[in-house]
Image (cartoon, rainbow, N blue to C red; front, side):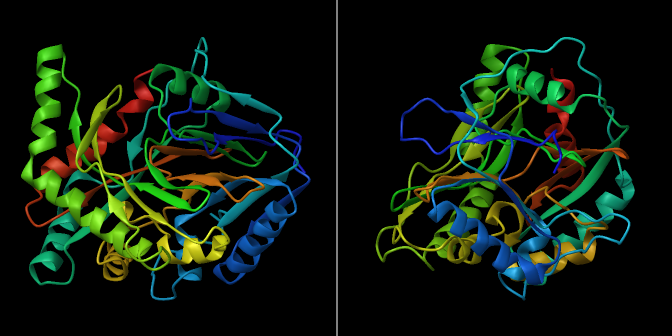
Length: 378
């Protein structure tokens, strides 16, 4: 077991309370699954640990999806590029709880290069639009990878990025073999008692140089028909997924189309919540909802088939989920967007956007690159 092991992730919190992150070190066990057939058994093992009074912190990768529904199609990693489908440390308690992050001097620059050309990207987005016109799907979230050289101190970079432009669901993982820096603003799921909350994020606009222009950008995003329609599609998917496990009549979507502002961009969000049996298993919850609707498309099964066809590499943890589970079965899981995977071979960042019928391919390319700009904003 690596002496470097460290996980930092958001803790469940009461509504209105100050966000807090737990620092987890010295695990008493590590639960790992490297193939889809082992996911359910591993997740059940994690849940048994929490039922016995332990904490769990870790992640589920996007390519774990077929474990929850065999109709989900994903691109598998090659033998020379294996990445865990599930990884959780088990702990007696957080070693420390923190509420903010500090700036760090002399942070390295990360110069990302997309692994897809502009022309190839445009061609694939046009193919997605053909699928939409043909009636296969309403929307698909198309992504690609950007690569950079190895960095020496991923933890310093994470702390500095969280200080420079804090996000509510940031997370850091160091297994000794690889490091994860997640600057995610998006909540996949939070459970408090018998309530499940999801905050899907769809709709993006760049920050502007003056206050007046910036406020105008917020107002324009909030009322933009394309972004509202795209956001509503995802809200309806989340409501449908929650309906598989929530009590009848308990699902509410409010507020809709709210705009959150971060250091480099504005994002449109909506909140969807429902009531569940407090003893519902973690496996049941993930089976109903994973992967997050905002990073697949609508309908989910067909969108994921098209994603598998047109994306040239596995997403790994990107668009999966990082989270913490407490002994009382409360949890927080983010959507692992704006998430760097670092190891001896270099740095990888997945980026993408939702493609709909009236998407302009060139604009989607620009939006995707905008979403990676947080790396150079510290």
